[in-house]
Image (cartoon, rainbow, N blue to C red):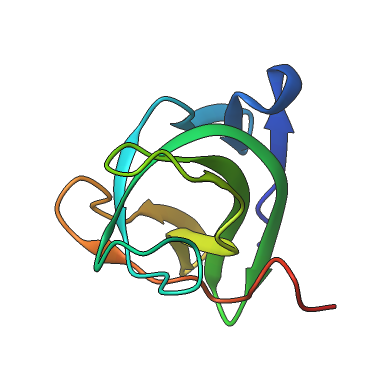
Length: 107
């Protein structure tokens, strides 16, 4: 079974099977030492630029800023959910620390 992943509304939403599932303006805890000097980044997602799926994990490249220190940029592809038995499952992004699955500066 295939799952349709798209970015909608000029990067404001991740759509999964034509349902809006992940939006910008969410605050995520991110472990991305190369992004800024903060031990854990309090990352405010401002826009999505790309969605990927590998090994059942769905990740989005998002730009935004650390609300602690103000650094802006792209920390890499952040995992937001998984496809399990043909169905999308959200990760608990409010209560877990996300780690990039790829760096924005890598090909």
